[in-house]
Image (cartoon, rainbow, N blue to C red; front, side):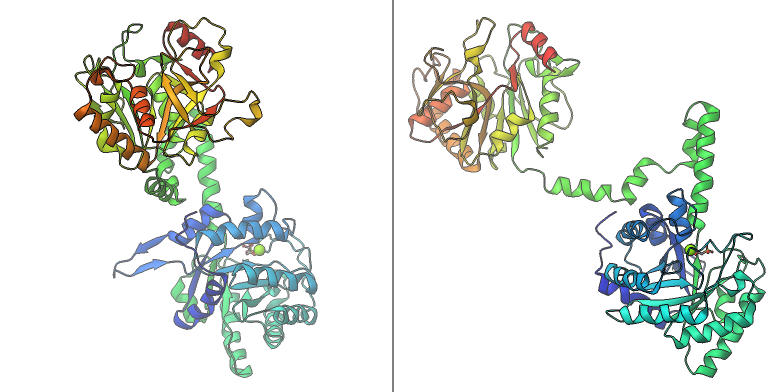
Length: 564
Ligand code: SPV
Ligand code: MG
């Protein structure tokens, strides 16, 4: 379903009355679910004189609604269930709907049905003058019991009185030709029903020969003259299917309902497909009679969703510096496979769930190995002389909406990203305290963080309080540290601007050792963060508890593979 065909119930309800004034005859096609309603609604053809033909509205049939649910048409499917199908049909079209109301139940039932259909925006309900529970009219041997016409007339009146507006039309369906009561009875009933306030008359027949239908139409025209008003006349040419629209028009019919053809056509096609798959032991042979998956996606509105997804994608980029040389691996860390999938691919999969579609990667060492599609690349060809802070600035043009910074050697869960992107801070680092519990020997210097407020040991308080970094670096002793920085940081637009200003100022003016680096050219990301703090800007933390792993060596690869 797309949102294109939205229309208010009030507007839709009136459409049939408006159409009946403008056009004759009207053609209605059956729909029994959303997709058949899409076909009924969308089908258009151009004929020789250039005229475009389409159906004027949709018929919500009791036969095809029941059959689509695998049930017989015998008043078994509840009114609620019929309305459920109706809702999907209404969603697929802005054309008028005629609802097949069966017998309408007893007069009280009928009043409630009228109310419900009116609220939903249906333009016409047709009830048949048979006794509940009815049997489908097309079956030659089913028992067909017709209602007393005066009792039926009361039901019509009660329905009309229950109306809240003048949009919904109530039509009487005469079954005399189905039950064998004949033409005379049909005409008698027509008069009674019209006098009771019926807004239209439907005459039904199950004969292949249209003779009795045409006879009725002729007499109906006479009757209309005699009573000095004429209400629309409706037919359902399922059996007398050789009669053309023009012929019906000449005879005086105003609405023609093609009542069951979509379900019958689809049944045959479905059966053929099922048999072909069994016969061939594969589905290849069935493709030529199948609609492509993409076509189905497109008619039900998937393309629109994709377009909107694109429009509302996060403007903010993810920047992943992946230029550095590594001692432990012979390929860039971003490309190390964890259970067959490169780290960077795993990172992107998580990020996409949060609407991050713009990913920037800075390559350097063995850049030819980092070639994933859909990524914007910058290359730091001097990766051996200038370190990560400078690598990052190769992507400076992508800072403008703020950015999410992620090291290329970590795996993380959705929870980690969810936490860091939902903080109000300009610059925020994701930190963890689990280094305290690391069982394996830590033989690598970790990225340690000291914070303004000392962390509490109560896990339930995680991430609740605002806390700032006061020192960051590898030279902070583990015993002294409050947290470990995990390699993910978020910069708002303002945060990115602070980072830019500090970097460029240092680049121009800095001399000598730069925090833990020998000089500015060897600056790590953390050295830059320390400089930002020293200049009085706030760098906040968001505390996470596990859900990430840094891949330093083969041992970590194994550990990660165990965790995934
Ligand atoms: C229907 O489509 O459910 C109808 C028309 O009521 S018929 O099946 O011909 O009775
Ligand atoms: Mg029916």
